[in-house]
Image (cartoon, rainbow, N blue to C red; front, side, top):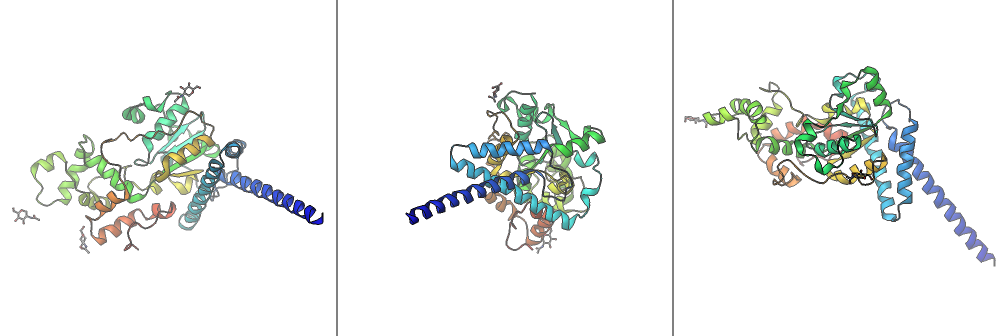
Length: 349
Ligand SMILES: *[C@@H]1O[C@H](CO)[C@@H](O)[C@H](O)[C@H]1NC(C)=O
Ligand SMILES: *[C@@H]1O[C@H](CO)[C@@H](O)[C@H](O)[C@H]1NC(C)=O
Ligand SMILES: *[C@@H]1O[C@H](CO)[C@@H](O)[C@H](O)[C@H]1NC(C)=O
């Protein structure tokens, strides 16, 4: 009899503790999914709480236990990415969040007012598809499928945050969900190089190709000098690392730490290209996007070219010597640090 009761009590207590544990866990995620553990002083707004509650509700009501676990995992991943970024920012840019935000500093950030999203555009990290999703969220398109690449970039009806006045910028930065998607920096660099220099391009060949060939290639042919076609990866990296570049920077290879000002803007969501679809869909669900809107899987720039992988990246970097590789790593060092990507080559320091 006694044994029976004891077992009963034991089971009961165990369940109680388990429920508490789950409850605590969920709350923990709710609190942290959103307010950047980052050095930001901004309050967690009502909207944010709602958003997070919703995301955890979807998680706990999911029929499959696997899905629920997956959501918790994704939420925890966000929390640890924000924490790491905050630590790096505190160390390398102390006090930066106390400074006012200028229009120039938010020039890469797109606004979607209906779902209250701010998205910082990082080229070569899924940005065309993000623009398509923002267009659907904002109501200027009904499906991501119908939006051609050029329309996503040049006729997207999306407003940049810099186009608002100071108060409009500040209010959106305070209350909207701020989103950033990053990619392994060397892979992003190789992807940009392949995209812009390995297939015909009426802008990048004349504007970047010509000065690069004329500066870094000895005995360049007249055709190469005239067309700017055929830049090698090594020449491209020489340009990138040159303090006296013959032509300026470009958003396709500018470090994310400069493009998106992650220390200043305290992003709520830091996604990675390496798990783009899963993380993007998690975010869409969390902000209450329509159920039938999922992140598109298509690659539309040079669809026949193989997507830049780490093996392809290694192949391109093998054209550089150890000093050049180290300098390229130094160039993207803050991106590696802020977004926790491991050193891509063993001999780097
Ligand atoms: C999603 O559903 C809404 C209404 O239920 C519809 O108007 C819209 O076209 C659908 N979108 C897609 C991408 O199927
Ligand atoms: C450039 O061309 C000249 C004449 O053909 C040749 O002597 C020289 O070695 C070439 N330089 C390089 C770096 O290929
Ligand atoms: C690597 O290449 C650069 C030119 O980009 C050259 O100046 C340097 O001496 C080379 N370093 C080594 C270790 O070969």
